[in-house]
Image (cartoon, rainbow, N blue to C red; front, side):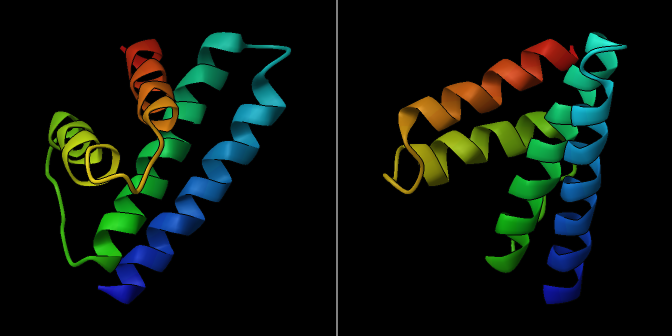
Length: 89
């Protein structure tokens, strides 16, 4: 599971880099890449906890249930994750 987490973290970093490069020329694509950076980063975190999700909505629920409500993530960070997910949709 650690290898999967590392792979997901690398994907998060690449997506964030792409989002930064696209922001001025294609804001919609930048928003999508920013969401995927957050998605892969959160997936990596849960992989370290030996938890995987097959749906984006399941990850979103886990972010709020296991991270925000547990006090591991600030409420604002959970709201930011939702905002990025909403932009993607």
